Image (cartoon, one colour):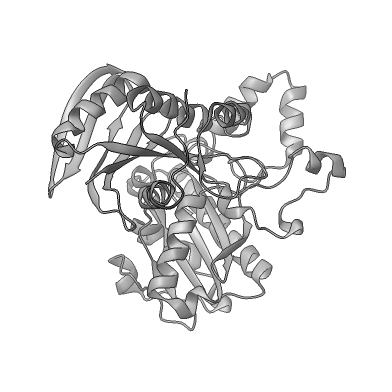
Length: 391
């Protein structure tokens, strides 16, 4: 039995999954290299157990080499024939997974300014995998691809049209997560999947997506992964005049970029942490204010997407916060009863799969971006088998 490896390379971690190569890949192991840098460690979950191995000073290339060595016993001589990668930005035209070629990799590097927290690290993972698995097919799965069917009004800004033609448009992100949720809804709740569904992907990065019959029609994220919801360290919705003001006050473009991507959001509002768990446990008034702003914006985005859909037939929470933070769900939905969104407190407190008591279903569903990547890689090998590229 041949195997598939999935990689989700971020700035400080490399998440991975090991799957069998078949039409419905079966997970063999998953985990991550945490805290890339001087104190990295490798966490692998397999066969119902978990191992943690300190790695010391580790970058993307050395981390993947250590990962390959650690997975060898789990592979048991079975070859890894495909590596599937999460790549955040695919630009305006890519609407599905692609086999990576040198030309495509060069193009994806050109998009790094649009996703500076993610794209360079995603592509560092690609480079490491190409070196580590020279005979494997390398498949990229894009967070932007799921949103490429948006109506024009949900895809554009009110700028001169030449900018839209140059690629200045609303891309949307977290598409792999939304792809998974759309698939689970179709399998488990086909009546809801056929209607108007809002999905809230809430984690260190956060966004919402409006689905009509399983297809994305609007997203809270726009040209970059900054727009919409406040996030762990990202600002969310911001009057562009603020950026002009900061530049006029003498800040450089790099300083503004660092402010908006790394020093804002929950971290900036609270002055305490970007971690929702720490803020929920904190007695500080600044923590309470950060939570109030986060949940206010969440309620506002739900209302806005309901308007974009012309109503709402179901709401889904996913992501680390969406799946586990009952308090956040309750605060956000407190004043949305007019949309038919009413929580049942006991089920909400235990993060039950169904937490509503009103006319509109409210679901809590785990996401699985690695599974989406694995299935795409399996399709590439089993049905299309793109030619292996020379790197």
